[in-house]
Image (cartoon, rainbow, N blue to C red; front, side, top):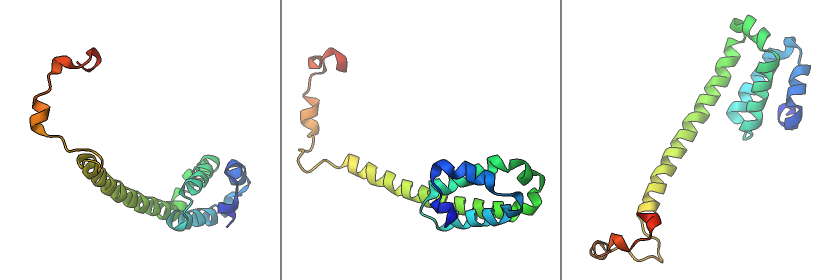
Length: 126
């Protein structure tokens, strides 16, 4: 609750206030937030702030924090997969909609299109 209640501008200051003793707990909370919270940007802001502020401790004791890093990475990979599927589905829908003429437009007749003289186009279209 504290992670999500923190205003975005205060995240770095809050991360600085977290002593290294509580890093496992905050990383565990961030891992849960990545998986369950609808506020992904805010959670990522927290992850970045903790990484920037406590980077040296996290690097020096990386074996101790490895399960938490894996938990966060697993959550992010899941979100990435979901977004990839959604983007792919949207791409196919957009391709279909771009190929389908709008209801108020007449379909282009290929015979009419062949009768158009390209020399009648303005200079900007040549």
